[in-house]
Structure formats: C-alpha cells, structure tokens
Image (cartoon, rainbow, N blue to C red; front, side):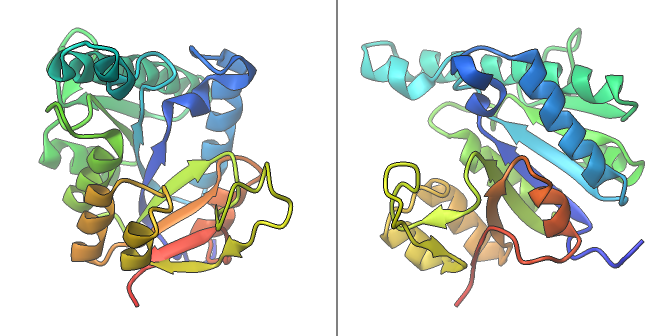
Length: 238
C-alpha cells in the first residue's frame, strides 16, 4: 500500500447525493453505488467520518422561508439527516464495512449519541463514523456541522463530494466555457461566494488550517485524492 496523503478524512455529502434521478427521497441504487466507491477508499486503511445533509427529505431553510418557525424547521432537517445516515449505514454494512451512526440529537434506539472521544475510538478501530443530527442546534447548516466534526476528530482534510469534479467560475453544466479552479484560498472562497461551503464552515477550516477539497463523488476521485493525486479543487491558505 502506498503512502496516503490523507489518513483520516471527513466526507461531506449533500442529502441530494442520495436522491438519484428523482431528485428527492433516498434511491437505494444510488446509495449502493456511492457506498461501493467508499469501499474502495476504505481498502487503503483510510479512517472515514461522514456528515450527510437532509435536503433530499426536508430542507429547513426552505420551510422557514415559507413561514415555518426556523428552529422547528431546522430540527426537522436534522431528523432527516438521521434517516440518510441510517440508509448509508445499511448499505455500507451490506458490503462488509463496520459503521456507527452518532447523532447530535439523542435517539438511543436508532443510533449512538455523538461523543467526540467515542467517535475517535470508533475511527481508530476502523469503523466508519456517520455523524447525524447536524450540530444539534438550529441555525447551523450541515456544512458547519461537517467543519466542526472535522476539527473535533482531527481529520487531515474535509472532502466535499459533489456531482461535479471541482469548483468552477460558473455552472459547468450550463456554460461549456466554465473554468475550473485548481486551488482557491479560504478568503477567496468567502469573498467570491463560490458556494463551496457556507462562510462559517470555511472560516472554521481556515482557523485550523484544514484543507477543503471539492471533487466528484463517483469515478474513483475520492480514492485517487487520498492516494495523493491532484483531484478536484483544493481550498487552502494563501
């Protein structure tokens, strides 16, 4: 096995990543395909923690904009992330990978409570740790939860896996002449509002000097990334 560039990573996925062609809900075929990709990463001994959004089931911000109380809407969104986490757990365990779902909102019949030291022990024992329930507080996005968990668990990098292979100056689907960034500074990501992660999440990563890498969630990009290949767009210091 070659030297790993990143031995412990925090993988951030949007809830929509699990939705498949329908664009909503949980598509078992898409989840299985994603977990097969993650299985390839785990073969190299990478310690993997994950944070998954809930937008495929319920998006708190949208519901708040339509008149629902923001705190209530955000709590509903956090519950949606638990559903997604359990779906990914099921798919990974069917492939033979040990996992634990740890939630910031206590629901002991479904998953373990999130305790940092417990999460670290699970990672050290080779278990995939799926962090659910956001931060446990309203008004914080799952981007911020991903950055927070990445710092707490001493991850070497935060990987945001998306449907595209990096960050572009404009939508590459709509504009064939879109230019891909190889690297972006933390300040640039915030000032240009590139939509990589929200400002709070990027600021957390900047303060702790942890890189954020945006890459494709399929096509083996995550595996190539942890093995040291230049994949995707890296958000880092100047």
